[in-house]
Length: 256
Image (cartoon, rainbow, N blue to C red; front, top):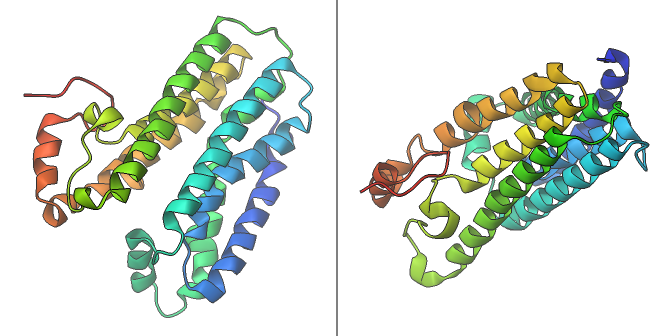
């Protein structure tokens, strides 16, 4: 059963974390810190929903999975962005909203992402309250989560190693997981959120489907695949050939 007021309790904490990130961004004139905080917002959410330690078996399982996903992703993004200038996405937003972006980024970037994360966290809230024993859907969710984690973490690791090699400068990464999908990290992220939904569904929270649907739309149409590939073919001509022979999102065999 959906408990709105219990669900609502996570939002102030997530907004508080976003506000803290905004304060950190001001002297740096760089809002990339919001990417570091994005996954941690879900860790905050499940701590509010479940408490620590979680009272149910499903709650403990979900807490472990969310913590592994959130901490790994946050550490990876922090290491990737360290010492670099602000991401091109945020530079474009900054240019469109100057003067005054330093203040307006509080709601244009930080609060917005906190609210999106709160909506997406619906499966986490939905699964926590269920005291039913683990069932087939829970184990299917765990298997899907493992698949997604392998693609996301493995894809990130392979790309980082590829970029560290000076011989690969200007080349397109098309090995490992990147051989089967142009965005193994986004696919893996998406798979993990549908895994969370399967676990929530096993607990009776069918209504929490809005969470993974919104995450999928963001990854495909907003801040993920579409945004990244909007002009990458102009900046990197080899990428056009990569597009022709490699699936965009769902892994599959390479096309001839």
